[in-house]
Image (cartoon, rainbow, N blue to C red; front, side, top):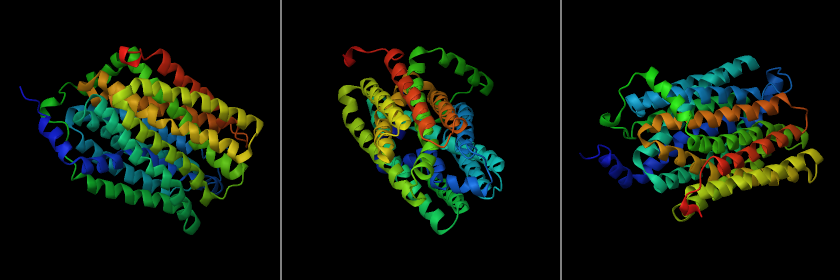
Length: 406
């Protein structure tokens, strides 16, 4: 019997640039929803009369919504297709962004951030599932790496653009801009084909589909991929939550220039994803993931030492942070592709579970930085180091080596 997805895969080959652009836009929602307002966090703390560490919780609350929301969107998309759930998610994202813009207290902001995240995560988790629908094996890892290289432009320009909006207008204008981005993405969705044909959709009740998460969690190799990507995400979000205060408050960097330091890391992400896309067919995704995990562990320890001793000042933080986030290209795409390749028939659920674990660990990283905040970069450095070493342990001991890796 012919594969019902064959015409879609052919269309993906014929219109690869269009699909690349739209899927990259969908996957970028995780970045733009957080990176865009980072320069405004110290200003928001004063405007919302928030206590020390409270504004960092707007990142943690976003990650909670992002993490839990994925667990719903995955099985829903496996049963009813990808495009409909993405459209619903974009509507929720627009409503949540408008709510953030109109918030008058940090409590209101946290609540609206949860709704914003539940909507945004539909785009990210289902874009990954669409990749699995259209591509296989090393080609899927290559495409994911390419998508992430393209979407790295979001953190490259996001904080800089957010800083300029803050300089000329207000922090509320940043969230109104996100409303516009959500509406534009919803319009672009109509030219993207449905990638999950009716014949490949699951008909089991959603309750049973949710129970299957327990079966997936018993798979050691899947936990290895999810753990490697998850702990790295935790370290990354510890950096995202802590760097505005480390750079702006502690080292007195002007908010509109904060984006330049943050954007340097995005350049590293783009380069590592480009290298990964070129090497993955030759060296294998697992080997590259392990190499990236080793790099993340070493640079995170370097960061912690500099943060605790204040050695090197501003650049003592900026250089190891640049190297740490630059390992993204070797860890994230390969860990996601490895997990999806284990269960291609349940791409939506696997993508949701892996994404939920990744962003759930992001909650841990960003929340710890907020709770341990003491006005210095030390909490950020310590949390990043612990999670960076944990990334290496998962990649090294839970993902078995194949003969091709030796």
